[in-house]
Image: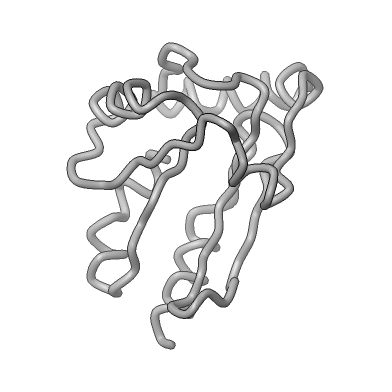
Length: 133
């Protein structure tokens, strides 16, 4: 999330809209926005996780107990990121989608484990492609 927040102005200049979807309550989403200093970036919430199910995103304890999670956590800590209070479903994994105006999927990434994120430059390249029409 932080990587996209830091590139929000670039995305806006391309005409790309950035949305975040969580699975906690609306109050949790509000707290998350404040904790992450998200400015005017929208955070939606889907407490029933219907969006996640529709997209086929992983959910389960193996996705948070994987040894890879420790590697991702150490990398994040070394970069200065800190895990805030867990809110919502702790075993629901997310992903990243780039969708062209009109609904065409240009890029999809489903996280295999907690901390598994696509390379931001790869997503930005797909966003630029989507912005071109």
